[in-house]
Length: 310
Image 1 (cartoon, rainbow, N blue to C red):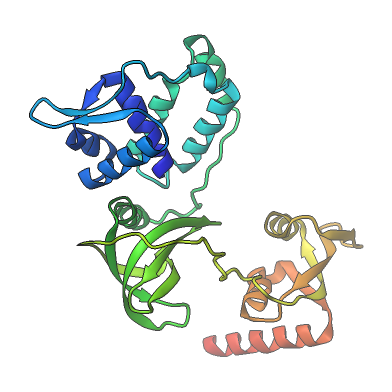
Image 2 (cartoon, rainbow, N blue to C red):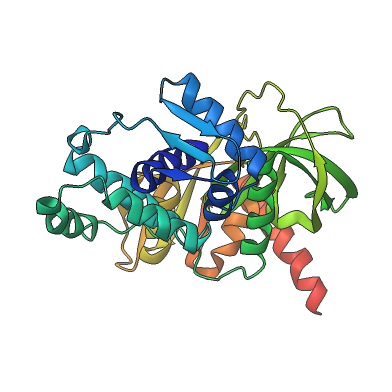
């Protein structure tokens, strides 16, 4: 997100010649302090950015500095626009729209129609089928914390139902499948931690700023298959479940049965709650043929479930 903002600053300065730090902060929805840090980053990268104090002062790029529009090919711009479009429903729509238009200024006019045509050929929709109306406000607060380097506070409930209060320095947002995660430095634990956004509540943006620590991205480590051992089992499933298995687990080995509506599949199974809940979630459209001990455990869980409704 910082790289996107730096590019936006360059394009604004090239277009408007001179802009105040407060105006840039307003346009990009960040603090003035963040703008000055970005200007320092641009200077260190060799971009000739200068600032002038006073009422008529502001930030500008030297007059002889230009970005060659031919530096970006039509394929480059198409890829950038497709990526932005895929994020439009998960980040600020206004900010995405502004970035969209700024990128178009890099395109020679004779290629605009071609790029728009290519961009519309691929659609990446990352939004879940069932919308989460509380997600956008949370993402906005977290993003503000990262952009402005401000501490976040929230109540957190882990997957065991244990509730804690956390104060963190936010560093990275990660979208994994349909879930958003925050990677942050937890002041209570004095270490980096990963938090699932949907488990947060009472999220607030503190007035306290923090100096960034050295952050090294870590794998989430919470995926169902992380460090797990598999047992190969044989399932008889409908074609609908076959499609779901392929979508989630890739290509598997299927074979036909006497029943044209069902197929046999060898499936890598995890013998834990995730694995059993996955099979039970398929209902009558999935039957475990073997091994026997998996069938026995499925029967036990079904019996326990049935007892709830008796």
